[in-house]
Length: 461
Image (cartoon, rainbow, N blue to C red):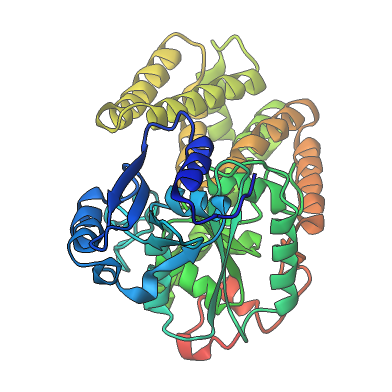
């Protein structure tokens, strides 16, 4: 129950002890001030810096008086109810109650237990910033404020979760973003169905437009420069305390295929790498399906010399091309997942050695053919070229149904799969933004950042 503080120290202590029953990490320290006034200090061990509390608050108050606390007055707050007091204690603040005062004082003496900023391993670049987000919300917000030194950068913080009480901050640049978008995302945050939030994915899954789509509708990033650039483009960001992954929306398919390094190097090289990335994104989805369809139903499309070579490699294979492709793709996905879950010291070695041994052994045993090994290897390399891990998951999932269509209907099945995917992408929205924009619908002034990378002074939208 949310009870007001009474000013009777014994009664208030009983109220707080009832709130924190069986919480051994919450410390109740009774003492007297220099004026012999009974006082009570309550703090959470591990969240509050006990050494600073003793040096800056308790010792000065006991020797001189309440006014001698060595904490900046601007950061000191007051609370009037047991709920406010409990929230302050669980945030890492020290709570001070005095006999005869129905208002308690809180001192922000948070204990620094966060790792230092370092470059995100999953989003490394050759050129660009080397700092990354941490699990501290205050640190993450300061990294953005350092890059965008303008009062137009707005932060709106709220608490979400019945028991987690997680701080969630909505960031945007006023005057750049459409304010209707800000109102929409705040409405969705207020209507969250999750009871507790431990990671940004809890929020992402509940506020996106279509929850059952394999394509990501928000970008999750650990890079402050990526967040800052997207804020300047009229998007919003959601920071969640306790995780380094920040959510960005609205997004499109093409923003998923762009790398931060596209804007850190010469335009000609950026255009080449961007088109290479687009090409291999399509290959990662369709290459195994096209191979299965052509070798099974459309052999006349293959040059004679190459067809004879493929036929010779497959003459002792007991499985059709579809089963062969499914075996290798599933094995490759299993090796990739094993490499991710294993410790870093052995994960990469297991992935590489496992792929070499299994591929060589399967070819020698006559289970799969050498051309199929090459196709699966090229497909795997193509999926690694996608900058966003969530975007590559979509192609990995859709690859299997398209392969089944190719193995049953040939190239007609491949085209049917492409049509279904394009229809889905055309209907997909990210906070009201069409997923295939600026191509569908066509936006002539914005499409230049899809086909090539415009110069910074020429990029007005």
